[in-house]
Amino acid sequence: MKHSLSCLIVDDDPMYAMVASSILSTLTSGPVRTAPNGRAGLAALSGDAPETDLVFLDLNMPDLDGLAFMRGAHEAGYAGNIVISSGESPAVLRSAEAMGKLLGISVLGVLRKPLTLDGVAAMLAKSEETRAPSSTRLGALVGKDFELTPYYQPQYDLATLKVAGFESLIRLTARDGRIHGPSELFSSVSGVEDLTTVSLEIAAKVMRDFQTWPVVRAHADVSINFDASVLEQPSVVSHLQQAVVDLSLDPHIICLEVTEKSLPKDPSRLVEALTRLRMTGFKLSLDDYGMGASSFELLRLCPFSEIKVDRSIIEACPRDNVTRKFLHAVAGLARDLELVSVAEGVENQEELSEVRAAGMDRVQGFLFSRPVPPQAVHELMNRPKACFA
Image (cartoon, rainbow, N blue to C red; front, top):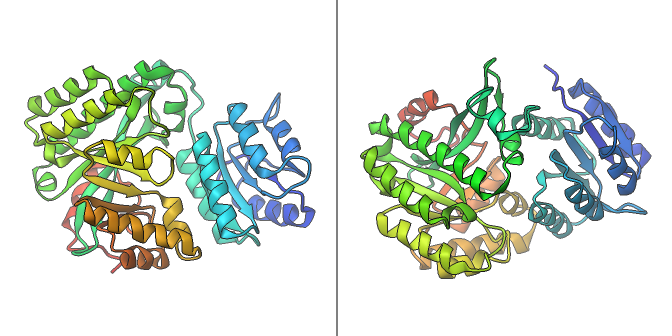
């Protein structure tokens, strides 16, 4: 079955553009357009042009290169996905991917040239998962046309190969039963107040799920993602504290994953909030460790119990020695500080070998399981161990 994604190829090599167009045309029924440089690519995203779901982006181009394109796309409010497709060195590709993510752009990953059918198909599948519905107002999304539905991706203990936890990932269930990714939900959020409302509703749904799963919560914890700007609100701390009391849940089974691109102007509020939550018994995870300049400062200031390493770092380890050493250093730091280390986004055996060699504690990713709906959680728990071993 073909995807229905609208794709844009931004590359100055006409032969590459022709091959990429041919591959995409076999995999998607949506329009496939090309642009010979970044400036033309930005023009293709603007004005009356059709909405673009996915951009295949070269880095080294005349007039306006791929880095400038990403900055321009960010400033123009582009809400789709980008795949970096380039022949540059692993270090350059890693930095370009990190730059895009720091800008807040959805960079799905890197495909080295020449393209392969399987590689492109995997990126299209990822893009389809995060594709947003057309509605743009938060009120229209939640409670009327769509319902917030937590999906759960298992984390495996690498020592026992058994499920040790789940990360909750939000999806939108439409009235027609179709499942959509979270990108439209969060792109429609305006300000901390809206983000706080959505975050607490998600947390409530996840906690209610775990309240009805005594066997699951006896053997695994659950992670809930929170932006730091939400957690530093005093009302949020008290709300979470009261929620576990009302549901008779042990806060030790709940891990709050903190995402933060930069330190707030007054970090004392965040430190106070996280310290109070830790005193209550909640676990705290520092998400995407190493992806931002504030990571170390947050780790130094806040009482985290876990470090998570981003998919982009895991993906680069097999081919980049600097990244490999960084992963080993993070695992060693976690052991020294008595923190749990989690590698997310492991998709193949080569990446799994790197994670094991580094000595990480937990692992999650498509190699083991995609996020599953609530009704599939018990089946995962009933497996004696991870089926990849």
